[in-house]
Image 1 (spheres, helix red, strand yellow):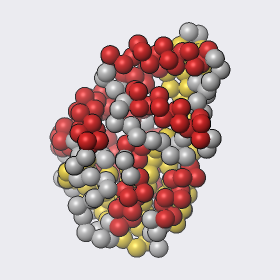
Image 2 (cartoon, one colour):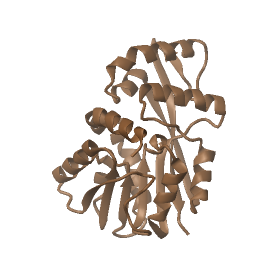
Image 3 (cartoon, helix red, strand yellow):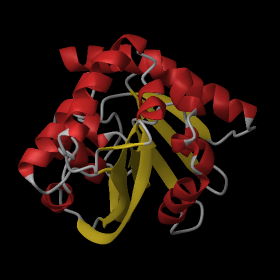
Image 4 (cartoon, helix red, strand yellow):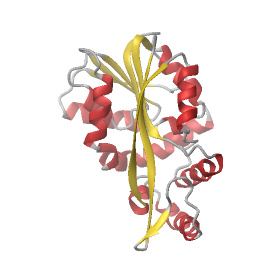
Length: 256
């Protein structure tokens, strides 16, 4: 286990309750998009990598043969178990594990999903190779995440702000980089569906459950916004509030 794994566990233990209840992570439209992509066949066997509190697992379970939630944070797996038990779901299980070394056999799953997690992986290409490895031929790897700007300077500034907010953040990938890594993992890009999440500073910070970071980061981001530096996310002041957009996307990649 790496030092970064310890950071992830610490941050997501702190964030478990806030994330489970956050409107952004419970967005019905996005959850339905993920379900539609993963349920491309009858009774699929599905893996959710970095499953967090089990929001996606709960959505995927009805109609699936099996849904496995995998995460390195014990508190998140416990949240997943509780959520699915409350929903009366008997076809789910929680498995501890790292995205870069998934504890599953080759080709075990029909679909592998990972939402809002790739930017926390220290080695995204390795994690995507593992997701491809455990997917059967003809199956799907489905990633949902915020994409960084294609401009390197904008992407670097955006990622720096994210790291100050949450030290478990590593790097959001640009669309071109994510798709290149999926292809390098032996997958074919099937579809790409982008959208924008409109964010407000207080809502964005609340999820981290780290009040000591709120004031200093607000000062930095306010100065950037007033200077017209948008960081590739449309950073701006509106009616005295910091606002910006996260450019998210769902990518479906198919294993030949």
